[in-house]
Amino acid sequence: MDAWKTALVDARDGQIRLRGYDVAGLMTGRSFTDVIFLLHRGELPTAAERRLLDAILAAVADHGSGAPSCATARLALSGNRQSVSAAVAAGILAVGDDHGGAGSGCMEMIAAGIQRAKTAGVSLEEAALALATDARAAGKRLAGFGHRVHATDPRTGILFELARQGGVAGDGVDFVQAMERAIATIVKPLPINIDGALAAVLHDMGFSPAFGRLVFIIGRVAGLTAEVAEELAREKPMRIRIPVEYDGVAPRALE
Image 1 (cartoon, rainbow, N blue to C red):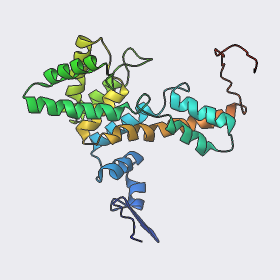
Image 2 (cartoon, rainbow, N blue to C red):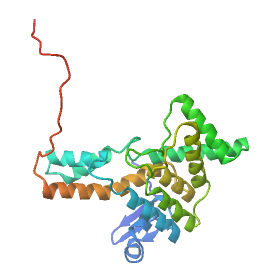
Image 3 (cartoon, rainbow, N blue to C red):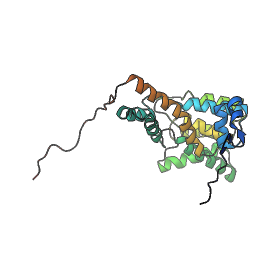
Image 4 (tube, rainbow, N blue to C red):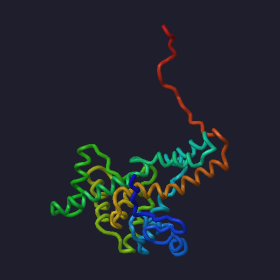
């Protein structure tokens, strides 16, 4: 059988190299964020890139025990306290298009919008208006905008400011802000949420759309482990009892 091929890790007796770098040097001279960037991009980040990825990971780490991923992890542990790994995995499985996964879709939209502007020879503002108009006509929700809790997501402005300070902000940030204005004009005011902000920044950093979801998973695992640890330390087994009200057919007899 042919051997698997990988460009990520070379591990053999007495040696571990990540993308060509000796793990000992990474352990003593670099951060975990550097290693994440290295594994996904193949090179070590600049100081500005490290700062931005650090900020994104902090931003997505947790959003309260009621968030779908955190609630799912706690519910799984409530019924199976013998496996913290199963509980964390259950939380990860709750990540999808509607929770934590919108970054990928937003990155695809950003790339399509920028390409549309270039192909049609129009401004980013015009391309954004066209996309917002098309989305409204199709009844399609645009990923990266609006939040069930925040009227203005407190994390968005910080990421954009860090991107500008680090010289990273480019067409991605400009386009997602143009989309925010276009949506307010065509539909209603919907703020850029954390998925939209990280999508714009990651686009300008050169990441592929898939990383928009993967980075949420990487960061959220930190929060999930804390949620699971707290559930294990503070709560009793089977303590989560969700009220359920039956609204089906009335009692009936078999003929």
